[in-house]
Image (cartoon, rainbow, N blue to C red; front, side):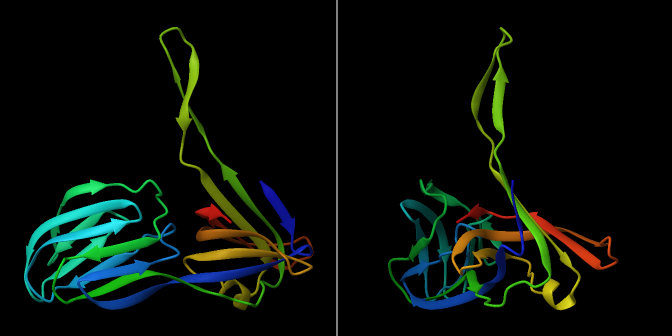
Length: 230
């Protein structure tokens, strides 16, 4: 765990919001820099008859075979791996998973026709006002080893569980400052010389507490998870 006092650094909260990007055609490409945090969703309004959709996710490929006609709606959710045609489930006919799971490049091809694509990804809203009245913060990375014991009572490692990242911030209560935290955001830590120190990407909140300091000031504590360190 790493902990800092606010006198040493400045804390910036850059909220992440859903952004809709629209394109029209038969071979469409999207590049979402935040795909590794929250995989984007695609909505397609068909412009004509079609029987196959091919989706490339970096070096991976997903193929869906279905019979569609003009004005049918196709919904693709690559975060939950749920795909629908007019709100009814459709299934992958083939799938080659990308080696890089933090997919940032998506291309979709029907081969012909003019279809309306809406991609719902994430956009970072950069905030240049640092968090005031912050008294301390920390972030933690942990990765649990998975072990097994054989019939001879010998224990050995078989791999690692999914790593977990957590963060927490403590400060003096102020409505304006606390309201800077959205539902999904990045945290940037900048040193007193203006140099970037660390960036916590894909932060969410799961705990909030009010309290009071020894001097009688109203305080708060926020904590949550994040996806990765940059």
